[in-house]
Length: 87
Image (cartoon, one colour):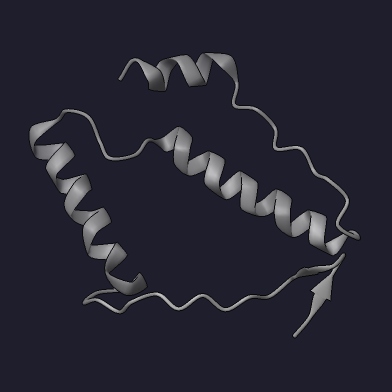
């Protein structure tokens, strides 16, 4: 067990298995993409939400590697955010 700043830096989380990569997540992502291309409409998530998830993970990693100092997640450019909100 490795601790950083009093927190578990590496914690195992068991995810139920399902067919396909990433415990079944990959086939679901592909199916959602194909549905969107064929039919259009709203998606279950957004590119902005995906970007924010990755950006938060990157900031958390940077924080852990630098003594658990807080790291701000940079905001999305307002024009880009507006464009995706109106799609």
